[in-house]
Amino acid sequence: MINEIPRVRFAPSPTGYLHVGGLRTALYNYLFAKRNNGKFILRIEDTDRNRYVEGAVENLIKALKWSGLQFDEGPEVGGNFGPYFQSERLDIYKKYADELIAKGKAYYCFCTPERLKALREEQEKQKLPQAKYDKHCLYLSKDEIDKNLSNGIAKVVRLNVEPNQVIKFDDIIRGHIEFESNNIDDQVLIKSDGYPTYHLANVVDDHLMKITHVIRGEEWLSSTPKHVLLYDAFGWERPNFAHLPLLLNPDRSKLSKRQGDVAVEDYRDKGYLKEALINFVALLGWNDGDDKEFYYMDELIKRFSLDRVNKAGAVFDLQKLNWLNSEHLRKKSIEELLNLLKDEIQKSPIGMISQNFKDQKYPDDYLIKIIQVMKERVSFVKEFIDTCTYFYEAPTEYEHKSVEKNWNSETPKHLNKLKEKFSSLNNPTKEDFELALTTVSEELNLGKGKLIHPLRLAVSGQSTGPGMFDILFILGKDEVINRIDTAIKILAQ
Image (cartoon, rainbow, N blue to C red; front, top):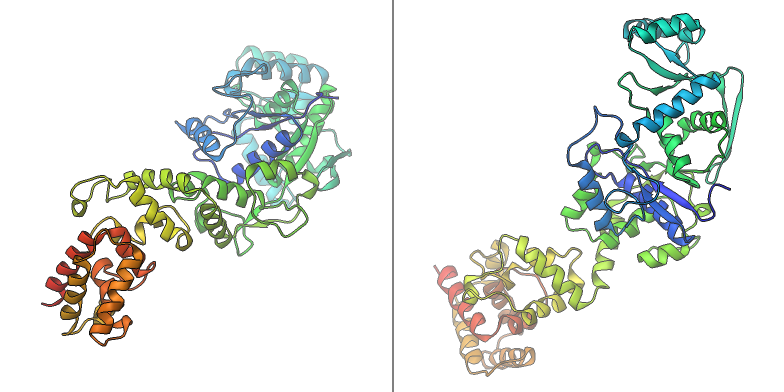
């Protein structure tokens, strides 16, 4: 038994941003750990220095924390199994590579890039199914090896894959799997710069960190037999493997940047709620056996199990994400939405100040009224601003189609009549505005629509939105009267 309690890890490379596929892997590891009272570890696999991106680790941790995935061990929080950066564990990998060499399970390779290129080209010419190293350096004598080492000739360490073997392992999601060793290359374990490859570092770290379950993407399935060979070579107990399905575009191609956003940061910056993104990503390959689609994190923890993860690729359906975002938004409390809206206003071009409101910041009770009338009409917090900017600034332009349809030579007279009636109201409620308009409609012997549509145009500049009388009540009598005056001056020209 590797460990009494489950220990899982998310082990990304710091190559830029957190891919939504990476978020799905991290989430499934997190849910599995929390569901089984285990530990969720973050380990940074930064041994490929050519792909390392400055600041990527900080961005990755920030994205995980924003998503609500707090790790129990790893960078910033520490733990008993560090360091949690592979670049700080090079001596460990060298020790274990030397052990493999001593056992005959690995060997030094001194082949030049030119020889390897020629070998590859020759194998391609022979139309072999795959290019493989020919084990040339496995058969060097001890004297040749010692001489090369003492002369400082560039070298790598390769895994010695024995031919004609069947490598077997069980996968929680995919069942029993077998690979022929004849199809597996003598993979490089230590590169010429002294850094380990993914394969050696991954296995050594998972063993030393007592990882019980390796939950990762399907793209690593073909690497698993190499890892199994390493576990067996060291005489270590294998962890449980679970390989998650691919994420696909709607056309069933692999999810990629070419067809849309793939970074968690992109979705965060576009205004998606973390609850919605987590809910959506959780359903990319997993379901609880029913039609339920709306989940909070605590529900996911209670329900998640690896045996409900599918083998087939999961389609990234943006429409579904948008729907989930609107559902999560609507279920938030007014207080939560108020805080989100205030944050959004600070980032918005309108800022926190509007000249039309005498340079006063929008008070909370004013914003709450906006939230109450717009909550069922929006899918993103920013839409509390973008779809109803008239609540924050008086319109300076008016919807052309509505002007053509709802404004004529009689409109200024009708609006002035409304303005007079509104002026007589004292702290009018929504119902007061409606009664005043009804009265003017009767006095002018005019259908209410003939007043409502031009009035909406005058105060909002638009032809659609929440209820007309809700808008009037929120704006208040003085602002409504000012906007009627402004519209008459502009549109009567």
